[in-house]
Image 1: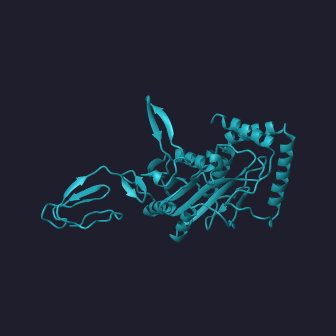
Image 2: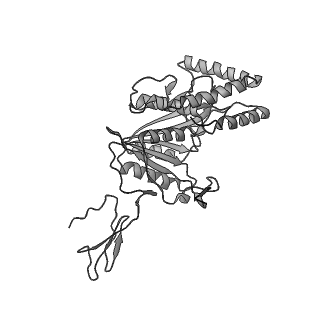
Image 3: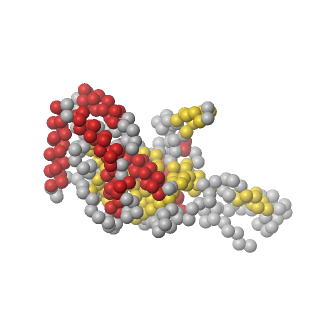
Length: 352
């Protein structure tokens, strides 16, 4: 008899009175029978396990899926990657697919703090986790959204588990989104760098530069994931928004707008008007009115503007790494405090 075992199931040897348990199916052999003749089937409610991830069944059938991934906190400054994925998910009507079954295997909860909240008068603890969502479109491709957190331990097992999920769904393209701080002025269109491989844009986007990183030095274990994607022959692209380092917002909507603008030039089913342009304009407009009263910062920004313009005008300008932020501009403690307070006020701006 042919049993419809899933490809990921790994049978164990049968023995008398043996019970063989897969994530969704338990098979009990009758006493005295060494095999699977006339087995008793016991359906169980256990979720499906792929690597370290627990997935919700029934699993969707995805057509030529593409991945949008972000890694927090690495290269997710201003929460640009997080905000972008959230907007795409709402637009496409995504659903949760799964999450790590034991996040503590990979994360240090003294660094990623669990969150306590009251629900109907009862306390609940929300544990930080890496979450996978999916969206099905009418004409394809379908999408997987990976909200990934950088691991503190067992990094190889973590990246292997992500690759297992990617390969299980036969992903065709992997797109990593992120943002970094750089010596760029907020008074110019935010620079976006990245790599497209053989992907062709539907239309050009101003201040988007295709760059190959030449960075060498300390990095994140998550680059094992990028190596695995390449080894498995999956198409890979990435985008990085460069944010002004002198104002560090918890949620930078101007950066999010730029990311969505670039994505819409690659994906025809992502509309450019999905970008939170007005929210970003409000944040930076308030920044303008506040900085006008600070001579030191005005001078600093003018210098950044001159450098920014020169970089755009020169084909042979040096290429900053998309691996780590620029070395940074030294500010006085008074200016640092001023910018910190300003960032708090801008973050408090209500969402549109």
